[in-house]
Image (cartoon, rainbow, N blue to C red):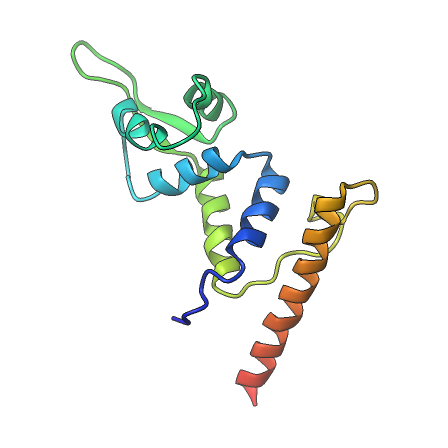
Length: 144
């Protein structure tokens, strides 16, 4: 593993948040829960205490399909949750990008490349182009 593994973390995070409509706290919570096959609300709250206060975060993640119920509450057994397939795909995408996959640079696959975007989006768009260029260069160099 390269020592610059997280060099483009900020760019990857910005892209993922933009593409999937997640907040930083939601993305970080999903990344935290990724190592838990199944979890209760207590495990969610354990990490959520580190995030900015948002009383609706859990319910929103559940409602929007990022989390799903694995086992409903029965008697004295609590409800157990798991990350949805959707969450697993997004987390996989994060790790793939950090491992050297390019970030899409078309408006169909990346909202940052649409026409009417903010100045910040344009700055990140330029960084994505540079990042992809470096990734292609590294791949080319390794093939020689």
